[in-house]
Each structure stands twice: as structure tokens, then as C-alpha cells.
Length: 388
Ligand code: AMP
Image (tube, rainbow, N blue to C red):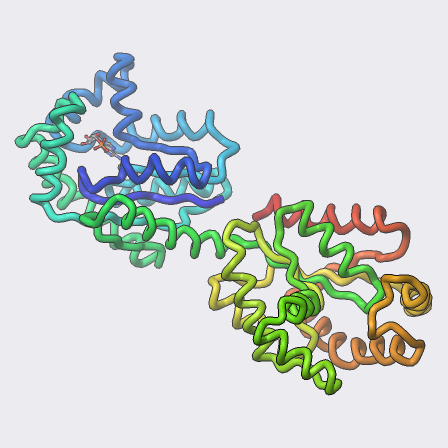
């Protein structure tokens, strides 16, 4: 989930920006001001209580706010998250929001503050008042609302600064500029909730075919460094030419090239739920590099899965493959197959052992048909996605 609070004085543009964001990110919009106006229009008990307070430009009581928010959240689940506009407006409401989020088993990801100065705010609201028909959009009440904002609402920022989720944006820029800045913050935030799976197993265990299927099924990006290198060669890029020379000389591709490709992949994958890494990291050094890359993108490893297949079956599978048109250049003889298996044991098994100690590794039985293994893996991935 991604939950956001838009903050700022009346007239900062929270409502306008909200409309754009809820559509783009499938968020449920909660504007306490709108909810209160609905209660007033329907002449409910809450509405009658709130009417004169709103007309004077003061804030209604926290009790009323809790009641209307609880009622609204209950009936509207199934969105990617919530967008709060005009809430929290007091320090106490910041605690209330924490409680509401805990109840929903989620948390507020960020508070984005649109900052404009007082005179700009008055000018915008007077302009809006010509069309909005809102009783509180007149100069006397506007000045009172701003006073309430300075006294009761501004201190809320401190709460979120301490939590480390406060972001400020200049609200006097164009609508598009403000929106772009908000989207940049949300992109960074959504990276925090990416599901990153490392798929391990000896060559021949089915990591490639299973990894691709899982990626496609669950909207994850498949990151196979071998495949990315092959694509660079096929497209004859500068990196591709360097890699080809290295392959021809029988040399390994240096880490700095692979890092660039992974970085590029992450940069270009804006709307994914996460990544499945196959064939990376292969060495302990690469495991540190991957931690660094993910950290740079405000993300981290979610789960490590190892597909287990007995050694004799692996050799038999690779031998069978070497006799078909799916034969890889590195599987073309028994000697090469054994060398690859040994290479995995020497270099990559220590990486899995490190992860075993640090995070724990989920072992999946890789024997049986493709569909049987796929079902075991899918169950695991579904568990992860439902948690995230
Ligand atoms: P708004 O539409 O957000 O500008 O809100 C209009 C008026 O509704 C405010 O001036 C307050 O009187 C009241 N109001 C809206 N949200 C809250 C809140 N979270 N806490 C207290 N009063 C609120």
C-alpha cells in the first residue's frame, strides 16, 4: 500500500493535486473538509455540530474527525492506498492517523507539504470563492483559517520531520511542476515497497524458465544478467562490443559492466511491483554490490529462494538439453557441464550460505513437472505479495 497525506495551508493546491494523484495511483481520497461538507448538506447530527465551527474558520473537534474518517475507511478498501487531504490538522490528529493506520495493518508512507505564503493563499481562496460558493471562502474567515493553520496545523510538521517522512514542495510553481515533484517522491516511495526476489539453484534446476514465468505472472521485472549481456551484444551497443571481446578471449565480464546494466534495468522499470534476480549475485562481491544498488534505490532484498534438484538429475537434465536446440554454448560437453556445476558450488553456494545466515533461504523442491515446481514457487510469491 502507499498512503500519503497532502499538507499545506488552505489554497495551496491540495485538492487539485489530489484529483490527479488518485487517478494515477488508484488511491482512495479522504478529504475531511469534503466529508464535513457532505454531513452538513445531509443535515446529519455531525453536520449540524460542525456547521457553525466551519463557518467561523476554526477547526472542528478531533472526535468528529475520527468518526467521519472511520466511517469512510471502513466502506472503501481495495485501493492501492489512501490519500489524505486536510488531515491530520492537529498534533493529536497525527497520533490518531498512526492508530488508524495500525488498525489497517499499514502505515503512512509520506507527508507532502505544499508551501505557499499567506498573501498568495488569501488571493487564491478569494478567487476560488467567486465560484465555489463556500461560505468560508471570504476574507475574514480565510484570515481566521490561516491563523488556525499557523497555530494548530503547522506544529504537525514536526511530528513527520521526526518520523523522517516529511517532504516539502514549493506550491507556487505551475500545476504540472508541483505534480511532477510529487510523482518523483511517490516513485521513490513505491521503491520502498518493491518485492525483490533472488532466485538461486544449480544450473539446470529451472531458475531461468521458472523465473520468467513468475515475473510475467506477477508483474515483476525479470533480471537475468546473462540475458541482459546477450541483448547488449545483439544490439551491438558499446557495452555489447566490449562484452563480445571479453567472451571471445574467454574472460569474465567485470562487475562494473554488470552493475551498469542492472542500474539501467531498475531505472527503466518504473511501474513494476518488484524484481526477480536470476543469476545475480553469483559471488560474495556481487552480493555486496546488489545490496548497494538496492539501497541506492531505497529498496532491499525481500526473499531468497533456492530451487533444489539432486545432482544426478541436474547432470541428466543438462545432458539432455545439450542434445537439443536449447543447448547453451556452456553446456556443449560433459566437461563444460561439470565445470559449470563446480563453479556454482565454489562461488555461488557461499553466497547462498551467507544469505542463509542473514535472511534465511526458502528452499523449493525443484523435482517433478514444470507445472508442479511452478505451483510451489507461485504459492511462495503470492504469500510475499499479499504481505507487501
Ligand atoms: P478544507 O476543505 O480542508 O479547507 O476544510 C474546511 C473546514 O473544515 C476547515 O476550515 C475546518 O473547519 C474543517 N476541517 C476540515 N478538516 C479538518 C480536520 N482534519 N480537523 C478539524 N477541522 C477540519
